[in-house]
Image (cartoon, rainbow, N blue to C red):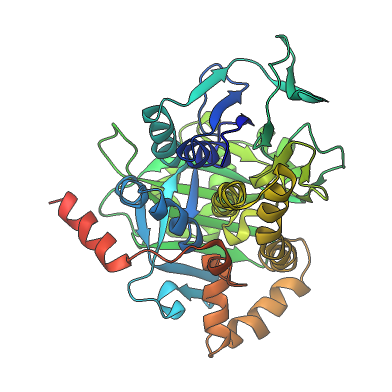
Length: 414
């Protein structure tokens, strides 16, 4: 395979993972990021078995688990205490399978350190505004600097607000307030579960263990509260204690976390969109991650889908003959899985975040009882883990050895 010159727009999980893989194939890679110092945006996320399969191939699974927290399942109760979501990874039928709750900064650190260790060039401080194609290649254009030299390939990993897709983005009704808070050993939460509480589907509060960030002395949890985008301004004007009373009324045990929120600056409001780039590959260009497909975080697939996209791109470049064929292969191996999760996420999100009464009624009366019975329980576990639709096989990926990974994590902490 002849080495290519490759520009990657975006220094998030998709861009960093793609850079590491493509560098290992001897391509000449440069990452461009608009921030003066590239870094993560947000709080906690879930590394599902699908994404961990990629990190394992990169030799980064142990480092990810070391900085994150093992999560054995999801548990959701409605306001009266009835269980409406019970999704343990054990239902996958994979010995020892688990997810990893991790702070975005920690996942960023694992991938960023890997990229820097390989000497991958990262140019910062200029926002990408577009690109220009010529016979010599594709150049990136910027807001405050001259265009780049032509590259053989541009990888758009710039996220859901990409400038390369002109189609209008469908913003979702609900966003979420997030905070990363210290976790104490006597907190009344399960340290190995993502826990959520619902009042119908209009209110949701959740707690996710996210491990210990590098240099921090204590582990953390990600705390989140669903909020309609239209209500954010009103929330901003509401006394903080009144909002805390509302959260406490839904889940009294969160009081210990609410006491650790002293001002609004500790809370970040995240807005979400549902969009799919209808042409993810073009002339010397391909989109990966949220630049290709973005959706509600309800199924926790964002970073995992990005990692799979990056792996598929690297494999496509390795196996195709012409550049056009390489990109076509990369998209074809991912398109069915992307389409499937875009639709499943769109269908399932209103069950947990919507203003209607019939969505949560359907969840509580029909889907919750059904999910306790095989094969629905196994399908639910596959959906949660990112493995629904069998995306790994055609990419040449396999699940990691969870028992060995757990043993290594235990050894490193003793």
